[in-house]
Image (cartoon, rainbow, N blue to C red; front, side, top):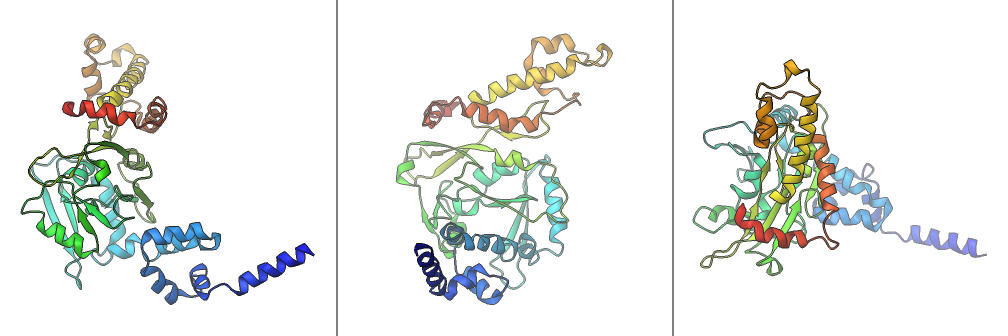
Length: 350
């Protein structure tokens, strides 16, 4: 009897379900209606739908494949989007330039929409976080394979944009544009004043979305370099103007690494550097004596020469960096943000 009762209740539940549910659960059957509904929703709302019902988990993926498809979006600005993304993946090797170069691609129908391409002498992530942009709402960026929103938890979820640099005449247009997109522009959150936050792009406070990589060449810088990029977010110390967030990054290079990494402090860099010293030394020791560096004896005494040597062409250890960073994370005290307190003492050393 109870089984029949449960079946009956289930049937009633299905029969009483709103047509709106079917429009979202069957996007291929109701394409125009699905598009109209989802375009009126924020990305956070669409993600929430998947948590409400198992039948709605496909809404996010459908939006990602259609409305949020990177190639469809770029097609409005660029004739060959996949070729552009392949090229983007190759130029992220940080070529040295004497000055920054800008190129703006404008939408043919909506002049207020544009893509800004910037070539700089610094790693791109460095300029995204502390170079050109005035607020947290402007820091989203793409690589050849992924889209990143570094401050999604405090900006995209709340529609509040926070300042990343001191106000002057130049950011006026930036602030106006951000407000026009529906964001409230504020200085910084009260709870963050005088504090230090340590963030990593894959720590959950940022959003990362994989892009369609069909016909896109593999990038020269692997995804893991950006996924594990660390930075410090602290507050400005200016007494006269408005407060603002101050991102701080440090690049990490080593002869045994093929790519430039971002690690927050010397306290985290040094253990990894010493391990890379050992790995590199073991690689060199396995070489025949005639193939070893000519300054072999000096390399034994001066680790900075070992770390910066340019003649090394052996095995690289970039794939091990994420594992070693997690190993360092495990050494943090429980509740783990005590690292931020220690880093606050070290800020003068950046």
